[in-house]
Image (cartoon, rainbow, N blue to C red; front, side, top):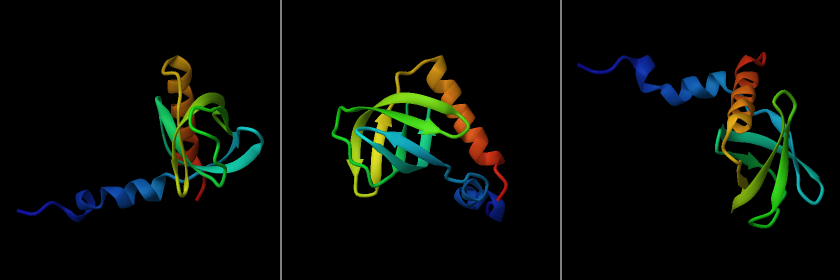
Length: 105
């Protein structure tokens, strides 16, 4: 017995509901960034900015506010940052996810 089609396409459902919100990455200067992934421990941002590994940066989200993070990875299409895990990072991540899911398409 096969799984129903709707269960097989979980990634499509997530893509349909979650949109990438434009943010600002503040390093040596502000740079636009699209929030690709976020959780209470950090985020991956699609951006042209390339702050050095270990740099302390600020992520400004239009609905979730601002949070500091440390650059932990660099990729061709963006940067990965980590947050100090705690109530603030959990609240920031939840607010960013909720804003992205509730934004009119």
